[in-house]
Length: 229
Image 1 (cartoon, one colour):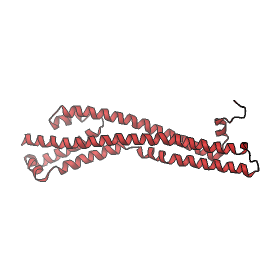
Image 2: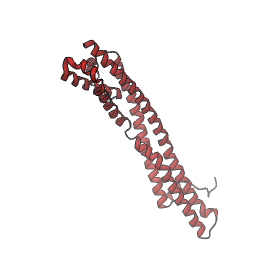
Image 3: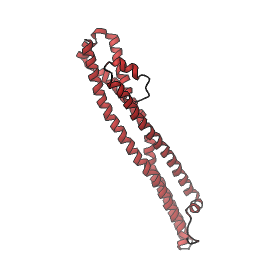
Image 4: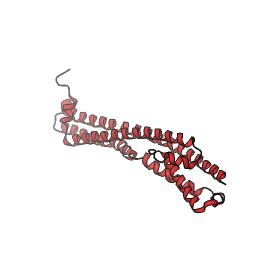
């Protein structure tokens, strides 16, 4: 290695205050990004496990009351949230109408239950999408922050030229600053964008499963009403 070869760490430490500020901001954004990625990865895994646990109870019991009692203390899952909202709404209607509940649904349909299920879906989506907007913001903003550091480094390079020392030694530090800022901006943005798309895909799969579960729940309610008739 040549003695005059640029050391990246020394180059960073010797950068202008503006570039150093940009690098610190990008590193801070990267730390936040990875914290969100780890949080959402654990959350998605746990949510899928909780969904499977709830579905085992749901499909092994035909009576809605039994399902409610066995699943009430389970940890959060989107399916459980939908079931609880739908079941509680059904109980309210049954307690109010008594033996006329079958005629009520026959005449007016299951609109009230569907809206209750939708409430459970919305609550689940709020939980599933938590922090993803921050991850998306980091992924979209980081390249521009790095670009700002790039522009500033190029400006410093031209300042070196303006002093009359149009040599590689005069312009290289500023160009290196620019490249470092660009690289760190991309290193921060790429994982954030990739994992954001991954989590969105996982959430979309859960949303489709929730839609299917909602249809199945309405069928289950109808069967229970037919048996109680």
